[in-house]
Length: 323
Image 1: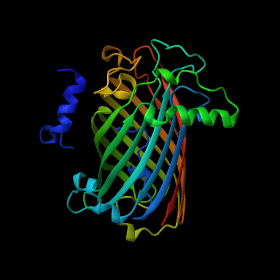
Image 2: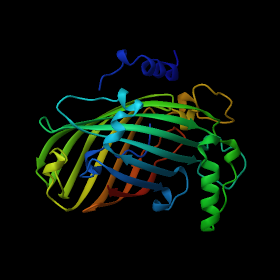
Image 3: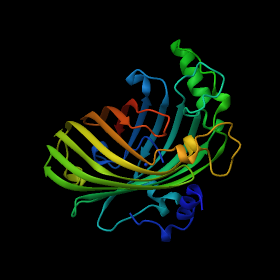
Image 4: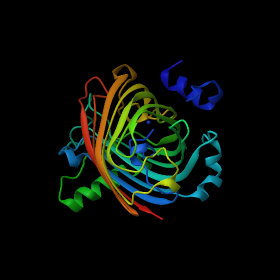
């Protein structure tokens, strides 16, 4: 059984899967906590922030969190641990990936293929204030391929900013279905309440988009509301802190490089034997939360994801409004 069908089997039959990341942008971590049960958040990633234009080229995310989402039909399949304070949300994500050069119409063999994805995300984050842990879960439904609008978005942005127009999007990975489920786990290891927090983290993702198991640590340092206390007990109106995260990923499948599961007509993909199965990722940033406004700037690094590739970096801005 190939890797892609093995992981699809575990998605379809979750009773046999591991009980415990499908997207680059994920805002459910403790270090991205907004002290409210209802808010709107926007995130924009671009490797322009690190003076490159390759690989993970751009990410756009719109997110709404509110109590009413709990009744949404997709929320019923999310994890609901007992004795936890939960938030529920929905989001729209758009991601684009390109090879190391966008100035040729030809396929760059041995490089990353062009690919784009557009997904609708339903998620929940459950905080266990007694055992000081958080379990987040999400389901992503959407499409990879031209329907992901990667060509249109990148071409127009480059035109507006006076940069070279990408020429190779006609070689992108073809349309296919995205259906992915993810679970993220955080557990406090050490803390100086409101000033420092160290977590152990783990994650599991399976589906038609990405299959991966991750483990690592993250931290917050500064002045902040303890994310493991009930939101009604959050007293600080102004928070500011640094955060960092280091994770190792065990990769089973990645459709942005290998193509979709059901459509094998893509003009170019990276073969399974050329995928790096073990990758390292580091993320760090700064957050300022002033009353109802949340602002964050971050940078990320990931080791090479395929054997003929190289390490990659990108940056992102995150703006949230408490409702």
